Every structure is written in structure tokens, then in C-alpha cells.
Length: 408
Image 1 (cartoon, helix red, strand yellow):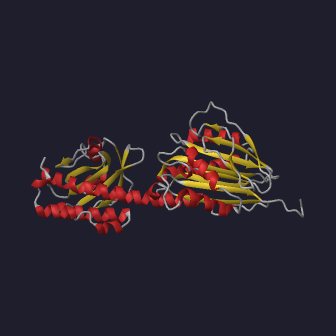
Image 2: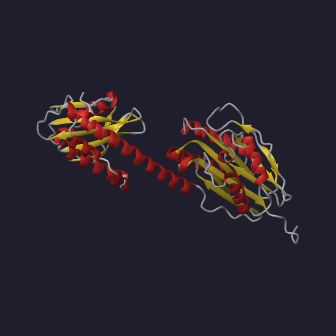
Image 3: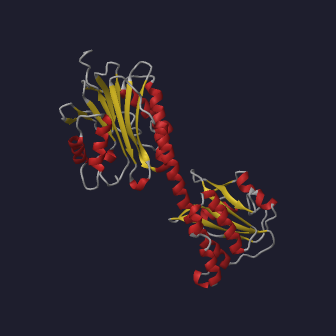
């Protein structure tokens, strides 16, 4: 095949123009349409289309098209390895068709539009196929090897632009999803005070950390923190589904070990391949204690009015989605007036090169008596400072208010 060195300088200049900095201001859909217009101009063709591999990695889905917009409007899906586009994706090689017919093109739209000749190339990212870019001519045209090299060079730039755009969209969607799933307002429960903080890590990409506080008609209060393994939109979406399932099971049981057992069954059946940690604590209307169960999550820390902070001795059972045969345990944690309980995810205490125990010790030193919101702020300031954590951080402070001497 021809190399880039054999392509005329003017055509190379036009390839560079396929993706320029101005495209970064467009949304993914607008960007793809603009890219295809530039590709059509570059190769002087009548049609251009991008098909992207779906999440199952079994089908190519028409995502953007010019000259054959019907592909997108009709939701064309091409099985991997089948037809013109499917062969390109499966073999990771360009394909040239001089005359389109039933034997070499699966998509009827290409035939019905009167496309005579086709050229397609794989869209690659890190050596893996993410889609296909193809162009077509309504008149007979013999695409050359130089045309294939030219389209592949353009395709490489298109792939980079797609990946960049998808990452931005995924991050924005994940952040929006996570904000919508974290409670915007904590419940007001007489005698109790709650405060929370959440900070994304890993360069700002959100993950699956969450906290939740809610009460049920019986008057019991549920306090939960959890962490779904992974990052980005998939982790945030899985977190949302798990959080919703946990709330549903909370209407059926007051035993946190029983609740987490049901949630474990849910994860293993409906969220296959997902692993998550969680700490669930349930408080009766008396507020004098909590029942807690731990699914592989860091232990909570108790805070007393004299300033002493201690790690709660809570047996760590297996994370959710690991082993259904291991039973889960419930531990009772006393909560006297003016005492509190601090819950957090591992992003707060884990640092490269340091044991999590060191991080937990730092949290104990940072905890102090005071309003729950001020305590959360102090811990985040002293543990994170101006640095961004490697992982997400979610914290939740529960305080039982001092007894009213006029009542008590």
C-alpha cells in the first residue's frame, strides 16, 4: 500500500484540515457531521458515513451520515463480520467495492440510493476497532490504494476526535447522573444531625461512590455509604441502580445484614461483573444505637463529645457480587447523646505508597466534636488539602444531638 510520503502535499494539507481546533467547540453529533462533510470534500465523493461499535461489540450502529442520512434515521445496525462495514470492522482492513450488489453489501439503503462504488476503512483506537468510516460514489469509480491510504489517515483523525468527544460526553453525563443520584437534601430527623461531602478524584472523572440517608414509615433511619468498582458513566449508572435497589429492600427489612444479602443477590443477577462495597447502618426511632453490616467497606469511626475518635470494630464481610455462600453479619453500635458516627469511602484514606491504616489514623486525628457539617469540612480539609484524591471521596457524618436537660 502507498505510504503518506506518496500523497501530494495539498491532499495532506486537506487531511490536516479534517480535524482542527475549531471542531473542539462542537458537540459530538455536530462534530461528526462536519467531519463527514470535510471527508466528502477531501475525496470528492457523494456519501460518507460513520458506524460505531455498540456496547455489546457485536453490532455497528449508524451514527452519522451525509448523503445517506437514512442510515441514521432508520437506526441501521450491521452485525460484526457481515456485509461491507462488518467485514471492515472484523478484519481491521480497508475494503474497496467497485460495483455494489446484493452479494457484497448487506445494507439495502446503499443499493437503493444508487451508490455504485464504495471505500471503507476501520476506525481504530489503541489497535482496537471502534467503528467504520465509509464513502461512496453514485457514479462508477475505481477507488485507488492511494484513496484508501488517504481515507485511513482521515479515519485515524476522525477516531481521535470521536474518542475525545465521547470522553467529554461520558464525563459530563456521569457527573450529571451522579449529582442527580446523590441526595440533594438530607432528611430532617428530630434529635439527629447529618452532613455529607463528595469530591471526584482521578482527574475529575466521577466513579461509583455514593452516600444515602433516608427514613421509612416505621421511623427507622438508614445510613449508607458505598463504592462501585470502576470509573465513568458505567460505574455511576451501576451505582444508581444499586442505590435504588437498596432503598426498595429497606422497606422489607430492618436487619442490615439481611438487606445486604438481598442486595448482593440483586448485584449478582442484574449487575453481572460489577463489584461494590457498602456499609449499611439502621437506626431505630429511639436513636440510642445502630445496627450495622459491612460488605467489604472501610470501618466507620465513632466520635465522642470529649474529642476521642475510635474505629468501630465492625466485622468486614465480602463485597457485593463476590460470593453468595458467605453469610453476612450484623453488629450493634451504641450511640449516646452528643456522640457521632463518621462514614467514608476508601478514596479518603488510600494514598499511593501508604497503608490505608495510616489514612484512617489521620481521619481519627481530624475528627472532633462540633456541628456535623463543620466536622465534614475539617476532615476534607485536613485529609485532602489542595490535592485531588486519586479516587472519589464520599463522607457522611451522623450526630446524635445532646439530650435537652429540660426534657431529659
